[in-house]
Length: 382
Image 1 (tube, rainbow, N blue to C red):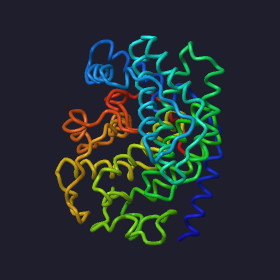
Image 2 (image 1 turned 180 degrees about the vertical axis):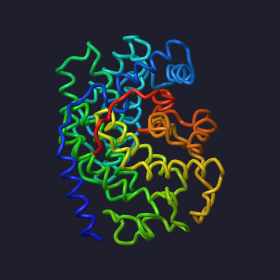
Image 3 (image 1 turned 90 degrees about the vertical axis):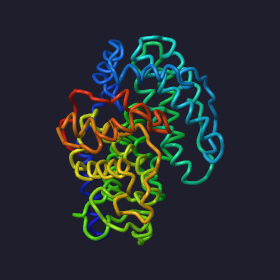
């Protein structure tokens, strides 16, 4: 089996290397066409976009000042400080784009410029890898929007790009062997930073990692009686998957770990990475359609029903809800026409009414991705 996995990785690498990336900007989690669509909806007062925008203008993130650090110890309050600055930079970038108010642009750039002096992470564990993923993806999404603002100089942009290379790449380019949500969060950051940095090599590394982790994290019965092996499982896949009672389509490596909490972060990060690839003309959604949609529908059903549907020893799902369902639903249903009734019901009944709007790298999806029309890109499959 290990030989088969190795061969698959070699094939994936050769496929990924076979095409060139001509980066499109802005083109991380949102394309220009999508941002323009949402801006039109916000300015015409249509919902859910206008309500989401108004909620964001009233948040503390909209008025936050920079708290930049030279080093981040991911095991102390540095983690929260850097998280909140990253979300604030992204908040102000979106507020600027949708309102045209330059004060938001200046605030976003001020935060981004202040973090251009970051030297690295010092906790000395995989917590650094997770922290780099969380804030790297969010800082990069903000930067990718703000790069089109005429008041941000080429020199300042270059300095932030260099910071990403020196401080973030070392913590992102080695896959964490912890639970799969960490690796997927790292991949999310790799993809968004690669776009901002115009870094084809980093982009393709992210694609390769996404291929490997997706098949090892999102289970299908067609995989066989055991999931695909991955570094970190130590050969004991039952323990690594927290002893599922049933192996069903859509089960994830962390479904039974905490009944939907970390699975939302992992699924959200995988879909973010797929969306970034889509905006750069690479379709990884198609090869993962069965894995991702099965996981979306299973988890949505579990959260809606209040039951883990017999897959976990503890039958009570997590009470946590994150604004991280719209990207996947938008692609598979709105773009591709796939029926996802449980996901739609969850979005309408639980996510939009009560989910946290900004949490680590899961931010504002209802505002940026709710009910988008098909606005193009992705012409080739990875």
